[in-house]
Length: 128
Image (spheres, helix red, strand yellow):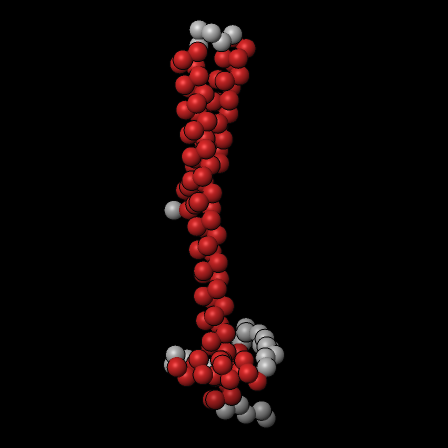
């Protein structure tokens, strides 16, 4: 007959579905980490590692979002300048431009509009 104590059962339940990961560190690093966990009231090096990894993941996600936001803002600025210049050319020189040139300019304006609708506005919404 196999008798399992309450503590052994709780221990089994605690480890159920979890994996063990080993980290090899030097004595100096261990000492630094031990000092850090004492100063910051962290219960163990394992908890420090888990919290550190979670913090890194959150920060990395935040940085990616910020980078994407800067990128889309930069694209919007450039497209606004290009659209403004193309519209200015049409307004000022429409009488002097032949139909082929006007068609190219209008085509460029349409392509920019489609690009903004398909990509930039979607990127903006994904950053919200």
